[in-house]
Image (tube, rainbow, N blue to C red; front, side, top):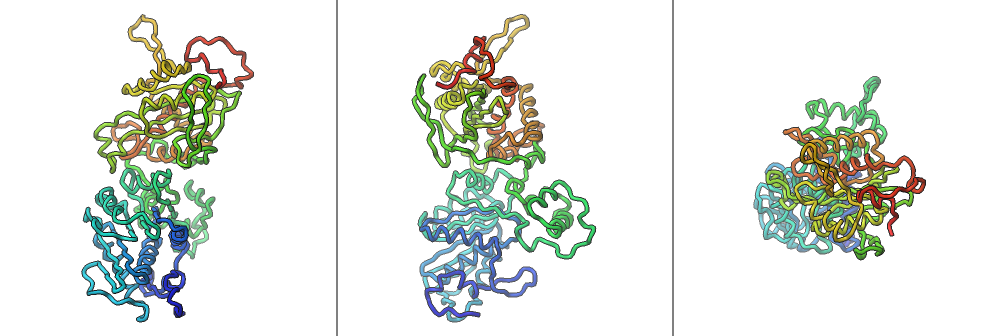
Length: 553
């Protein structure tokens, strides 16, 4: 074993790790920490932030027993042992895990060479290691909702956060204890535990770029231990659909056989449970409580990075120019710019209130508030070309629809009217802003009466199943038409609830799903067989069609 001659090398983890010992989970023997590829990647993100003099915030979704906790504890131990006034806090989901993680760190300390082992300040009490270099390391359990409150830490390791009893409250207390300064780190890691909980919501926010956390996902097949080396020659003659996809991702026979054995022996034959414990994709990890409405077809969706992300801006008046302002985390995503020969349909699903029982399913009650969503489809190709998604005052949502409609060839805009929320959008859109291509529905109140014309789309017990069935057909038969990553996430948690109604699973949103379902239903009515420029234009017969062929001015 090499020696450290230069004291400055103490802070170099690549050198120092030769003195950190861990228990090998296979043999039970004490071995030197040799990071695997997953552990090296986690370390790489921490180092990158340190070099950039930025705070490190990461959230890790992982398969079981891949060594994520070990490398985070090793990093924290290294800093505690080699730096003055460094403070590290680990919070585990239960007492057994807390004791195990503290034992791991204490083992690293006890097996350091005498010359490198800083003296303890006093005898350790509980899971608390304090050193004479004024550094300390502590391990708590999330069963204490106020864990870490009042402690100032430089490094926070949240272990198996999805299983914390009251994760939102505990995280709120813990994150206040870590200053947002260079050299600090918060690492939240967990296997999945269903949808709608605090960990799931934190993961979604990180993926959406709505938080400062870097989302790191590690599928089971990148871990070298998950493989059977000795195979029967006829073991894998027939592959199921999942195995075919895994083969395309590079899995060999040994990995697929390990998967089969694990499903059979450790997961009781439950494939969904295997997906949760040993996911191959982030979507697969978060299993839902109801029967998935779109089924396995969601896997065939291949989201596309948008051409532009930001928002349309400009004066809201006739003849004004609408500009696009790029914003990395903007609410509008464009996959296709308007084409002069194409007609577009636009469906707006305004945010309304949610029922009390649905609000209570959200770990964060604030997340129970619905989002507004606007979807845009090209009537010539059937492709999703734009999506606006966010929270906004309904009075301002009319401006959003006006700008989007104006840019996309003054396409027909259908505003969903259920609950009365649509009136706050469609009235200013048509009357104040003068957008004359709003969708109009015909409505008969009494037999024999002439139909009245009403602005906006009305979703009923008849139209809702039609909308969703049509969207399910698109997802199954033409998944390439749908571009949105956010839609794929919502579709994966869109389930048939116990009452038989398709809806977002507990604690999950379905705004994108319902808006796109409405947009494709609208598309059926306005689909083009030939380009607009090649059609003989006719005088408008109603204001629903009045300027459908008018290029944005």
